[in-house]
Image (cartoon, rainbow, N blue to C red):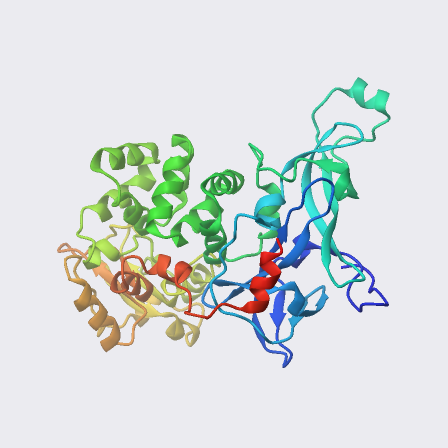
Length: 446
C-alpha cells in the first residue's frame, strides 16, 4: 500500500486494484463486507479525479456506498470505517466512474510520446485537506508498433509497465471501444463464481461482453450458471456461436438445460447443434422432462461407481474439488456402464459411512437398502418431501428399467421452490433506507 504519511496516518499512496476483495471492518472489529470497487468523480482538463468512496459488498451480495469521509484507516488487508453505513443499494450516477469496472484495461495514450498503453492499475493519494485524489496511473505499453520508431524515440522494451501522473495520459475521461478485461479479471480472480456473477450483473452490456470475452470457457460457464436467467440468455446469445457451444459444453447439463429451455425451439436446436454430441445428449434428455419434475431438476453426473469399486476409490472421486458439495455427499453404486443412463442401479452409500469403513472394502457391501430412488416423473413437492423426510441432500433418479438417470440435490429443489427471479431479487433488492445526508453531500460534489 505504500509508506504511511506521518501527517495523516494513512498510506501515502494506495493502488486501487489491490483493494479488491479487502475486508471492511467497523470500529468494534466486526467485518461488514468487502471492497468491490472505488467510486471517483472525473474532472475537466488535467485535474485528477476526486475519490468519493467505496462500493462495499455486504451479504447477501448487496452493494452499498461507503463515503471516503467515513474511512478511518486503510491497509493491505483491511479498510476500517467509523461505523456509520447506509444500507441503501448503491446505484452509480452519470457523473461517477467505477475504477475497477470502467478504468482497468482502458487503452490510453501517453501524452509525451503519443504511444498507446493499457491501464493495469490506478493509485489514489490523500491531500493535506483530507481529500483523496487519483494521482497516478500504472500502464503497460502496447506490444504493437514499429521497432524503428521506438528506437528513434528512445523507448524501452515492449510491454513495459510504468507509473505515470494522471495528467500524463489521455483517454480516461471517455469510454473506449474494445476496452478488454484482462486486468479486471485478474483483480477478481479469487472470487467465487456467484460473486463474480454479481459484479458482471452490475456492468453495462458492453463491459459485460468484454469481461465474457476475457474469461476462459470453464470460468465463464461457472459464472453464467450463477446469473439471473435473463442475463444468461443475453450473455450466451451475444457470444460467437462456436464459443457459445463451448461454454454450454462446460456447463452442468441441468444448468445448460435450464438456460436452453428459455429459448424458442428453433434457437434451442441451433445451440444444441453447436455442442459436442456427447455433451448435448444429457441436455436433450433433461429437456424431455417437465421442468418441475425430478427428471427436469436432476443432474446427470453424480458420483457413480461399479460394485467392485473399493472405499478408497469412491472417496477419491468425492474429493474432487470441482464437485458440488451436495453431490459429493453420497455415492451411487450401479452395474456398468457407470455413465448415465447406467446399468442396473444397486443402491446408495453416504460418504460418512465410507469414512468409517476400511479403504480396501468394496463399496457395494455398504449400500443402504432402505433409501429408495425416485422416478423421473415425480413432481417437485414430492421430491422436496422425500428429501426432508429422510434428511437427505440428494436422491437418485431411476427409470422403469432400473437404470440410474441422475440425482436431484437439495439446491436443485430450492432453485425450483424459490420464485423464478430469485437470483435477480438477491442482486437487486435494497433495504428501504432513508437518504444519507453525508453521502449525498459527498456525491453531489461530483
